[in-house]
Image (cartoon, rainbow, N blue to C red; front, side, top):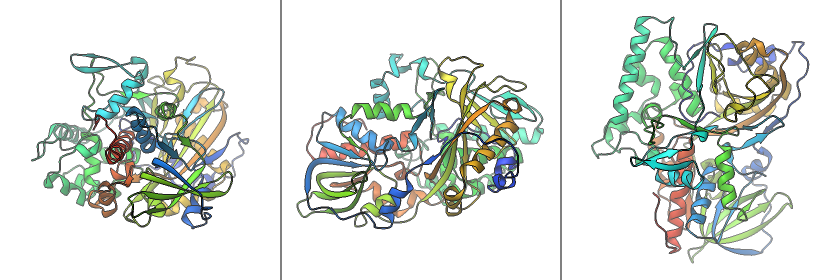
Length: 542
């Protein structure tokens, strides 16, 4: 799931072979041999036990904790990391899945580690103080020059970063370098110039119009009014009508938000282009941090810092606040099928809001949030892709496909540039309603997904014919929050932000933007609120 910006171009309105979700069925008669692989995803069976109210009641036992974190995605891991960094140890993190990481999960085979979701982190802005503190702790920031952080060059994306298949030939970068009209090019240049203005624009409150994390953005009413219309309507109103530009911007919305421009708030659409002001020495502010396993690297490192505090395969439910200011949380062990009660002085619900509303219906406001389904496929090939024009890049996008292209897992590790590798392929299911797309995710067999992925890859790289050794498919039914028009003022979002101990919320849903830096920020904010509630001394990183 390519959930951070630099993957920024889908430059054709054509749906391509992978565009219609019915494509795999049309290909069902093809005679290509079966391909090894697996069909995985988040454990919906465990999730549906909570949804349907089928988790057994606690057995009567009660365990005491200082702080309980429910959810082991990026926000929960960030909260736990912050508690540990502050010297607080009386906490437990419960995660429903067998593995932590949320949509920063990773996989591995004999060729390489690879991402199952988000795969990179842009160099953080100056305002992302807590995130920079963590990156320094992890050895990714190695010094300072002229007051700006110096990043380890081996953690930054290696050249070539991006290439685009445009009219049958690969080119460097992700916007066509030729073959478009002067009028279309003029619109693109005008849009780029307007986004440059927004990047430096300050609101009436003196804050940047758009910031990352978004909590630091201006609250100027004129800027917030952008949230009342769609990005598509904003583009039309401002004269951005060129087909090649609209296709490019469609890709951007699907890349970061899994949604079509018509379903994205104009505020969120502009945030995509205007919030990034990466702060780094040596001209590295516009670069990305990435690893073979994607953001799984960051999840793993956070997990290592809190070893001994993580309890996987456990679901939280039936939260109740007691008269003495503590909270009881029922915890179900999926391995033993038994439930118990944990009593905590503070509870951090670090989970998607639709799950939190089922876990704690008395304190979580329901509704108002929509989630985008995605498919991620990791394709093992016995030779690197080639193609006419620019050489293989980390990020490879085709204008003739409705997929978001593929990234090369071994791009960062200096391995044989001609030998085996893993290509991580992404497709947000944005054409259907989320409900219809989730039904497809639940019912489509592995072989049909593999046919679709294979056909799309061979359309981009015919030279891979005969080189595909395995296709492992991972499904995300609720991959990321979609920032629809009105999301900034959604009651559920505002109520979660306003939460106070003993129950706190922490998730990128509270930002409306499913980005690593947003989840990290929300986790740190919740952890510091819990520490203050417990009178544990700390120096704030916010």
